[in-house]
Image (tube, rainbow, N blue to C red):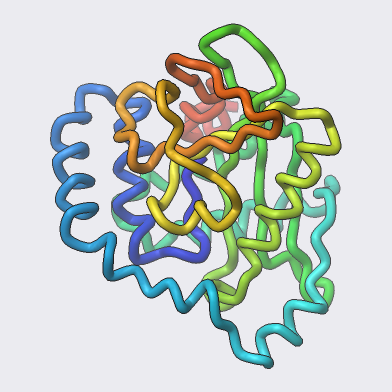
Length: 235
């Protein structure tokens, strides 16, 4: 789902959309804020940050290892997630709890870490979606996080590409997310006609079909996206 790794200045507003997805009472104000943002700032996105990288960054990225999470990575993943979203004042700062809840529910279909010189610097999660036609094989992307000091260096993109490749190898039909209106198109995501999520403007809802077929109706993310840490604190 929402991700805050490579796009901190813009993902702050998308965090409002995540809130709206699970707090419909707040939808009207958050929708207005998002529309204002899309109208005034979407064309100022410096695409060159994603299309042009220095030779140094390209060299550094060759040493990044993308692999499955292990039990030993859990604490590091939490740290990466907290750090990536820490400066987003609009975020509810529950992303780490979402990952924990997905893991506890056995719903982390794919959970990858980006490791650089033995240190976990990024993470991405994929979990099953409830599709309107009841069909399986569709997954939600997110949260995706990269430590602030390693952002805008292609690590988030590497995690996304590897995750999508893993989904296809599993025979998945497609993937959905809520994200920046420009960034995710480079991975093949589009704003699907007839498919969406309640409370989310169509400009920021994306789908990528692996077989060309796109269901019609409203998608629902896993209930773990409601997690706010209260279950953990009550233990």
